[in-house]
Amino acid sequence: MGWFIRSQRPPKRYVTKLGTIFTALLFLAMGLVVLANIIGAWPMSPPASVDVRLVDTLSTVTPAEIDSLEVRVAREALALIREATEAGDTIQTYVFLWSIDTIGAPWDFRLLVIALWFGALGSLLHAGSSFVRYAGNRQLVVSWLPWYIVRPFLGAGLAAVFYVVMRAGIGTAGGAAPIDMNHYTVAAFAALVGLFTHGATVKLKEVFDAIFPPRDGAGDADPLREDSSVAAPRITSLIPSRVPVGTDPVPVEIVVDNPSRDVTLAVGGEETEFERLPSGNLGFELKSGLRAAEGTVDVVLTSDAGPSEPAPLVITP
Image (cartoon, rainbow, N blue to C red):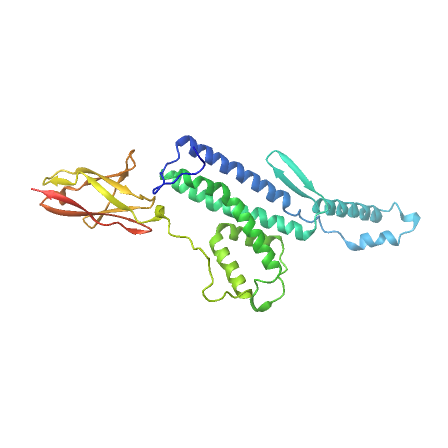
């Protein structure tokens, strides 16, 4: 037994109830870690406003006035400012139950960390909505689980790249000066990049093409060929393939190759509901109206890759 297999059609396995619960708990844990790190990286709100004139009196008071109320207030104000500054320079990073403090972090480093975590948050929201949709429809395929796990890391990395590009002023129009972004701006950009990674990737490609215009005909030396696993569905046979004329609905089983998750069924030109059988085939009921007279009824499956060849279902006398 080796590490790799060769197959013309990869087997499609759906996640069980236990696997769905485990994946949901994993999403919950990742979400809690991301939110905790966002709170740890977010700058603390500034202390209450202090009258600067009180602070300035420290350099002008005489020893006799050292215990005056004004000087004591100024001392307390300076202490608050010092504490707030020390706390504002600290970034707390949480790794599940462990916390790591980064003391004396520069402001640019804090913004980069904010971009990372908000990019992960955006990607986690996107992956979570996809997970809920497919799990709710009982169409969650095992082969897509790595995508849900890796998605937040991809969003975080792409948000960091996007932040650096925007800070460098490369992504601004007309060669404008670099954008002086605060933490709210960085968080908004990073979250959007995480949510819409494809659009962000396209934008970065436009920036790269503007700096380094591609040559005509340049591309991959060995472009990827179309994967047969995403080809249009192909109906192998119908069971039964011949149905007598009658007035009652008849169950029909479709033996199909490449039955993608988003496939739709049309019988006699009308969209028809179907179910996925334990054998991996599709099953539907032929309506009584289509059995009223002898002839041929076309069965067609359609996915994002296109429609299948019509499979004839013969209605015999």
